[in-house]
Amino acid sequence: MKKLLLIILSMLVMFSCDTDSTLTTEPTLMSMEQNTINPGELPMPMIVGGTEVDPACPDCKYPFMVSVQWTGNWGGHYCGGSLVREDWVITAAHCMQGESTSGTVVKIGLHNVNGTTGSETRYIDEIIIHPNYNSNSLNNDYALLHLTQPSSFEPIQLVTDDSHDEEPVMSTVMGWGATSSGGWSSNTLLEVDVPIDDSCGSIGNQVTNNMICAGDSNGGEDSCQGDSGGPLIMTNDEGEYELIGIVSWGYG
Image (tube, rainbow, N blue to C red; front, side):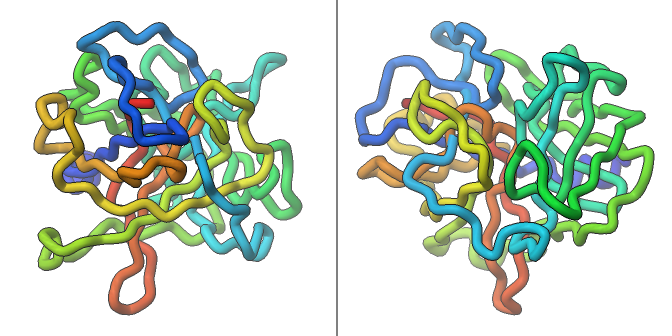
């Protein structure tokens, strides 16, 4: 558990979910929990300008994609996640703060978030929030969820090579989040390609060494509310997917 937590120490991704490139003065969290964000606190993400994932589950293009859901009468999707071991899911810490194992389930193998043939529901028996998570800055915004039963879906591998860190990278983010800022969420899994932005635009003073920025300076393609905790991935030289970040917060 601790070894895995340390491996993912450097993965955090920040987006804006606006459809243009104008920055607002306050950042947005990317879960479906619409908390009020004050200056100095940081915001939530959705898939903006994306396309429907193809092939869809049950012939999953992204078999590691997870929907984190509340249980009970008011249940449903509120954050994304990634299957990183057969019995471990990684998501954002701000998605799990104040949540309980009994009030949360994960669903794997979904295309339609309300149900897909062949999908799995897994209960969790442990929530590990990064010990250095800061809810104000969202530094170390990671959490691990242990599944009570292993999943049969294929996990995604963590990024394995840092030799290309200084090169331009086109990454992909996916989720069921809102398709415009403050808009409706998507029932079907959407994806969008976003470039890694090493400059982090004009908000570099809020970006820690544990964060990376991704997004189009022209706006229009992004993650948004409901996509928090979901994966930011790249394809390595062998054509395999690698997890390089976790959707956390952004402006827009």
